[in-house]
Length: 235
Image: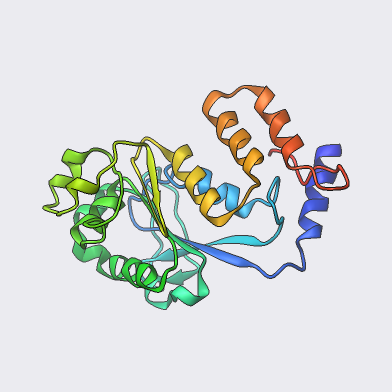
């Protein structure tokens, strides 16, 4: 009961906070698990620095497309990628999927990611989406990572010297990650957007990497406000 009350209080506390929106690109065959930690943490006010400030909206390849994820989940997008404007977004998240091999199908999404980066609005790409950015030239001159260097070299890109053999890399307003690093991907997103306080972010990452309940207690303590009331509880 206390957990439910805390969660409800956190939601109510953020009810009047102006929303900032993170957009998730969805398409047929997108890897639903790769952005799952990130979008759940963004959309859920529990433990956040400013509960209720954030929301997630989905962006499809067209206004009327209903993509089905790699896991078979159908998603009705909130808007089409052609209607997405950088000034209306806090970040564009590009999940992976084998469909990125066909740049023609994602031409609009790749172009939109470029518009975001030129505008200084963050873009977070994981797995196959990093290859699409590589082919478009966005990884030629800035630190980045992916599934493997050999994977990106297959795109013919010129950024080999900037490749970092790490699970996730954040360089300014660009986040890249390998497909086996959804937790590290989420961590970098949370850090860039300042979703959690520093100690809460560290506890969150260790909780999901180790599964040890001690980190849940640390997360709850780190998220306590000045009054000593926790901002939320895990779902």
